[in-house]
Amino acid sequence: MFVGDIFGSAGRHIVREHLPHLLETHSVDLLIVNGENAAGGFGITPSIAEDLFDLGAHVITTGNHIWDKREIFEYMNVPSDSHARGRRILRPANYAVTTPGFGVYEGVLADGQAYAVFNLQGRVFMSSCDDPFRKADELLSKIKAKVILLDVHAEATSEKVALGWYLDGRVTAVLGTHTHIPTADERLLPQGTAYQTDVGMSGPYDSVIGVERELVLQRFLTGMPGKFEPAKANPKLCATLIECDGATGRACRIQRIMLGE
Ligand SMILES: [Fe+2]
Ligand SMILES: [Fe+2]
Image (cartoon, rainbow, N blue to C red):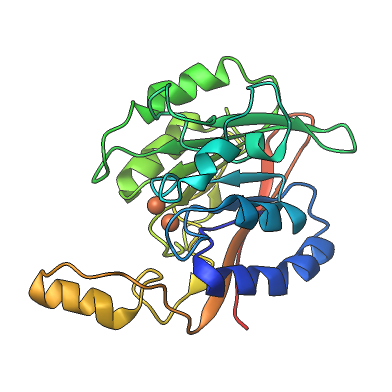
């Protein structure tokens, strides 16, 4: 199960409310959550990361907001062969190699099932980073696990769709994040990769992608700078459930989930 961008306290609240029953009902083996907006919409703190791990997350993925809270730098500063929680929070793999943390994690579940998760950021309408396509090739040449999930954190649908086709048959799932809007295009690609352009935000939907409506409207209406505050109203959890063959990594089912209060 993959939970889309958890946004602020409203997002953390709705995730806390629904995760326990979702994990049980669907017999979830592996839980991955995107936490880039978990701290007031901007970044993630070590204590929030700890809470998400306590809720059952195996890996936390992120994106362009990963550096918004400085406290996370030190938390992520662990050796590459560590399995500590700080090693299981990822930043996009195609960032500069000198940045803290890692963009890929390989782990083993209690039942012996190996898995890998990696995180990439798009380049279209986003700040510059390395080529996500070639970075995916490079990472996949080293990953040993068959069950592999990619969180592609990108703005443009075209870039995500292209990456889905590029990796079809090479990973279990390509799931998009960052736009905070769930897309209805979940499908199994022909070579066995589950794909969805964007899982959607887990956060307040009476907002503009998580932020208080009035503040964003004023920005659009006047072009003047202003502080963005996270909204609270109408929280929803957005997640995507994938079923796959553990031996081959091929996906056989993908299901979109959206739950309100
Ligand atoms: Fe986000
Ligand atoms: Fe983002």
